[in-house]
Amino acid sequence: MNETPEAPRISNAYSNYVLGLLFVVYVFNFIDRQVLSILLDAIKADIGVSDTYMGFLTGFAFAVFYTFAGIPIARLADRHSRRSIIAFGLFVWSGMTAASGMVRNFTELAVARIGVGVGEAAGSPPAHSLLSDYFPPERRATAMSIYSTGVYVGVMLAFIGGGWLSSHFGWRTVYLTIGLAGVPLALLVRFTIREPPRGYSDPPGTVVPEAVTVREALGYLSRCPSFLWLTAAASVQSLSGYGFITWSPAFLGRVHGVETVQIGLWLGLIIGIFGTAGGYIGGKLSDRFGRRDERWMIRWPAIQSISAIPFMFAFLFIEDTTWALAAFAPFYMLGAMYVGPMLSTTQSLVPNNMRATTSAILLFVLNMVGLGLGPFVVGLMNDLGADRYGPEVIRYSLAVIGAVGGCASILFWITSEHLPADLARVRQAGAGSSQPSD
Image (tube, rainbow, N blue to C red; front, side, top):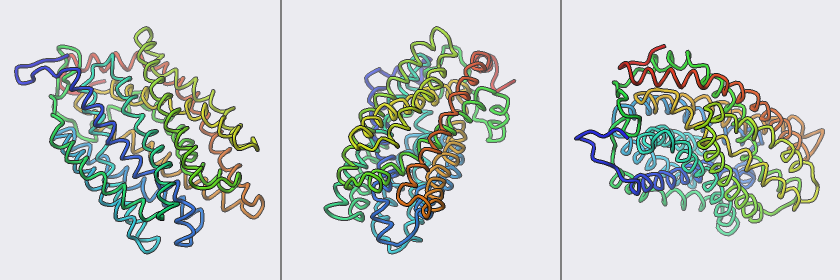
């Protein structure tokens, strides 16, 4: 680790505490973001709109503002206190989540959803940058994977808790409850996380330059083939992932006739347990094999992406509900393995003065493609094919989006071929200059 007189040593125990607390923040991030999926049909019936409108609400209404707010917020995080930015964002998105429970129509719910997106834009980019300073490169993929498993725990709690609360007290109570719960967590982040020096955990002798502009960051990334191919691969994977995570509850309800509470329980447990396992295993494999050959930092996602496809089709086309859910477990576990290696590799591909900005740029593309298009495209296909296929149309819509996701395997593999040269370039830039170079 880099140590300076102004930077007293940070213990492993405290680093793990920060990781744990940011993990909890990320759990709340995805509870507030994804609880809409389990409430989708209840809200649709209450306010009277189509699948296309609900796809817009779950996708673009959130993603556009989330992604566009992310870059300026990340710019602040590359210059100012990251823990304060995370705490303020958590306060905002929790308040807007609570407000979602008091809306009277679709327009008001869309506005509240936009507010959640703007607040959540302050979550991940500063957290990625913080964790890169708390954990050295050889432990970074594992730390990022542990952090990223907050997705699956958050979705699990959203599905189980949201399904139960909705069934007993209505969907509005769900939003009020989870929104208000985030406020004390924001205070804990602000007053217990310390702001480490930039580059604290990078190799000794690494230069810590001034933050660059967005234009400089984009110029640097445009000359980094690994980043470009990785972004393309992760975008395709995200398109499939968000399509499934949003519409799988509706699929089980419409095609298999499963009640909301049972959907929340079974999907929540599978996503929480197997998603967390996949995320953790993906990071460990990336760290272990990446130390021997840097290409394997991202080759595991290539393998898992294509391996998940047979289980995806089994989930959609097996008629027995129990066996369909059994197939969903390995499908989701394999689909979760790319997240930690993707985040860790992205952070390692850039100098430490542009990590939050790079994370925001990556998330901008991923969320516009995945979160924006994924749920919307499935909802649109549902409406277009409803007259011909009836309730079964959702089965075919998900099959199309899932098959497209399998193409990410090729893109991840191409990324791995460029990785050693690009990692060497950033190490040279960090050791030898104050600005990113070719």
